Length: 131
Image (tube, rainbow, N blue to C red; front, side, top):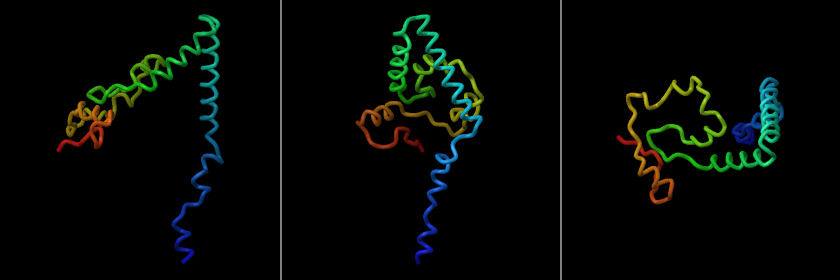
């Protein structure tokens, strides 16, 4: 009886394996390079525009990360943050492939219902399925 109940549980080692092993060497190198690049850009901006500019820019980034576009036909929801960080200028294959709006079974979303759910005026999923 004990063996049957013990086999139902996943060993803790497999759950926390990523914590023990860590990330791949290339991934950690890429992350450290990005951190160094960001620190260098912050220092250059501080030298060029003054020491108050990098904290102001970080505050703007925090404010813009809270606001999202209401649900609707436009897929991008963090347009302000994308414009500030510069990620709006990067165009990858995921931007044009597997777009659900290109599907034959795509039904437009009800923006009013989505906002009512977001504001707590209505219950249910933000994007109800229309069938």
